[in-house]
Image 1 (cartoon, one colour):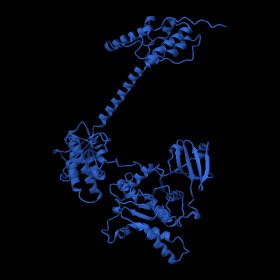
Image 2 (image 1 turned 30 degrees about the vertical axis):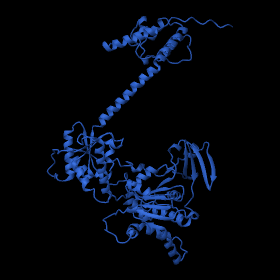
Image 3 (image 1 turned 90 degrees about the horizontal axis):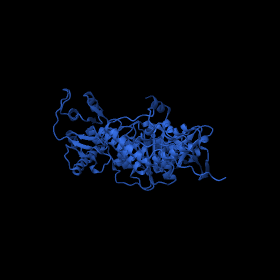
Image 4 (image 1 turned 135 degrees about the vertical axis):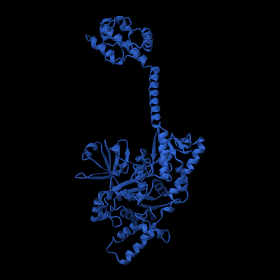
Length: 604
């Protein structure tokens, strides 16, 4: 059957030139008269139906083809009133679109208008408008956030020498009394003195690099600190302020409070905030109606409950949800599983996973590639045949910790836990096993922060090791437990073993660590919660080839002033090393010292 001849193309419904002219006229009317356009509900003449078109392009809904006899529905799909095309559908139908073929032609010509709106020029114009809106919002945000002026107390600078560059786009103000106190603390070899000298050097370099008047403000990013986009202002003239009679003006803290009060009165366009690590000073500032905040930029975590624990409990339906396409094999005495599922993205390398019950599983995550992870089973150090220097793991967390301590591929191990969880005993047992039996390391080096719990007892006589002996009571206690492991040995054998152990265990002071390099050592850092992040970095960077570093502590027992659970060096390294393929962490939870110690930890 021959094909029917192609239908004759009807007259154009909407001429493009007419549309362009009417758009220009509509834009003129809108700017001059601001007259509203008629809505779809208002009656429009047939000729107006061809000219009353908004500046916005018509959006044509894509359709597989017209359905005969359903003209009104077809036109409602062709022209969407929500796009701003102010054309009455019924008027258009009455104007001559009485057949299905004409509806098809109208759809094609409307698509041409949409293609014109989707041209590269129109898309670029829309993109420029969006970018201009975004940049405008950013400028508004910057202007609103830059209205804060932070006045720093001296203890903030002494606590963190880089605190000047930690306030983002805000401005920083230094009172003259703060500079005087920095000058008073610069002499000495303590950490506070080093910080005072460092902040003085930073201020000197900043003044030379900016070259501007300190009273007008110096750009904080002049030394390359791009994250600090604000300015540094220094007090250059006396400020008038009135303090209550009970606050003597000769005290440095009260002078800083007076400066803040004067700035608050003169800088009404800004919010003046005092930043101090001194709790009493913040209390006095709030009592005077001033805004005071603690310095929190050094906090690794605001809530230590969110600190990485090193282990994850798998759900009960783990095998059902992750068993699809599972692969398993055995290698070097361990069983490996390659799994995939929704839980894989939340796992980390060297993180322990476990399931208790009939289908129990204790494993470590060895590899993560995309949505696939490789799990490796563990060695059970709770069994007597796998005892390490006579010590067996008494709970699940201790078994996890012993696997990390005995793994030669793990170079850094951090252990957290309350008193009596076995941190020092496990580390020493693993060290002696690998130094004396396996000869993987040459010796054990043990150090700790010499921060007293109560009052300092003063200078100690003797050599470096003799001076450290009073601080190493935990080492002596644990070595005594390890030396009494074999009850069948004679007194002479135990004495020989004790001499051998002492020849392989060295006690070093942390004060003399800078510049050293430990090669093939088993380095134990005890009471690491009392170290700052800078001290922790100094210790860990001493590790040379073949050295393993173990950091232990309890962040609930911090004795160093101005250190909190969130700013401790131990918290810092746990957060920074998580997920590294050669580091591991475990938080020990159960105390194994004695029932008295366990009850005291909970009740006191």
